[in-house]
Amino acid sequence: MKILVVEDDPFIRDMAVTELEDAGYEVMEAATGGEALRLLQAGIAVDALLTDVRLPEANGWAVARAYRERFPDLPVLYVTGYAEQMQPVPGGIILSKPYRMAQVIGVLATWAA
Image (tube, rainbow, N blue to C red):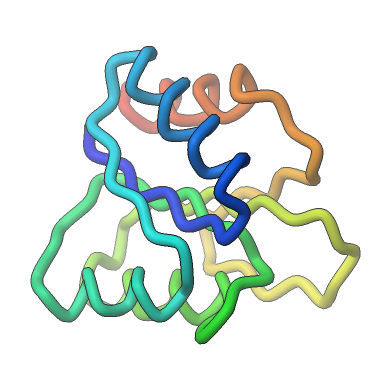
């Protein structure tokens, strides 16, 4: 299962990538919403999206909508430290920061089943 991690905080992004790889997932990463959208435009396909909501260039909601236009059934896991207006795509799950990677891996495992 290939997962795209979109997170602008380098510490959180590195932690997520390392723990997901340790759990056996193939991981791609993007530091901004714009970078994630450029990967999509380049034709990069993923099996799940883990995205922060507040991101430079394009927020997590916009990233998820764009990926879902190309991959309608793509599972999306949003993480946020803010109580902001929720706009998740149908089928998306929201986790509040701080979150445990065990929560993320548990959700991904159910999606992979």
